[in-house]
Length: 211
Image (cartoon, rainbow, N blue to C red; front, side, top):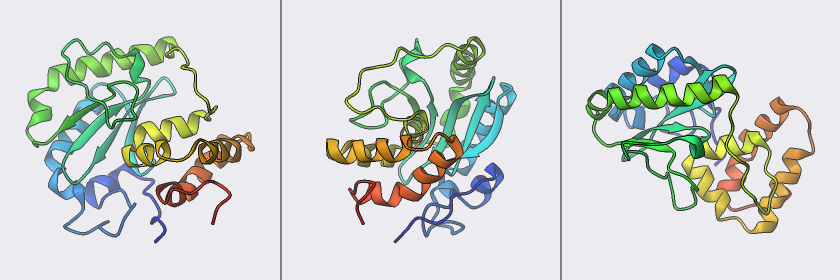
């Protein structure tokens, strides 16, 4: 079954969900279980001065024109994931890798709705650190990869652990097919559209040209 249309208004995430599956706008949606914790993370991010938008069906927080962090809710936990995680220092040692194929610890993972409030000083400090990198235009050193992935796909994989694991499980040829498919257009908006439309195929283990 193809994905539903992902939400484009962050407010909808907190009231109905992300729009990715049939649990959208039902009591079984993961956002219902973790709502109070998610709202705490939202308050902290907004208070830090971040701009809230919606990307890949989730609330995304931006600063100085750059994606800084994105929020997600899952069956067993909810998370605040940092973009450009290779830059983060993590002095408190609280960041985790989202999955076995994640190169750097990139997220704060919570299994208790009260946990974000207890960790608020650390969250604020980490957001401030990430915002400073955005302000200064600092990016992590590009790591060598067999496939030259467009930045929109890299960010989509960072923001969606399920998609990242599915993409990592693809054969090198299938990964390359997606890179070529996305790099064949110069328009970021078109690449984002292709990623959204291709998510179901990636999850099914297919390359860009497979049906």
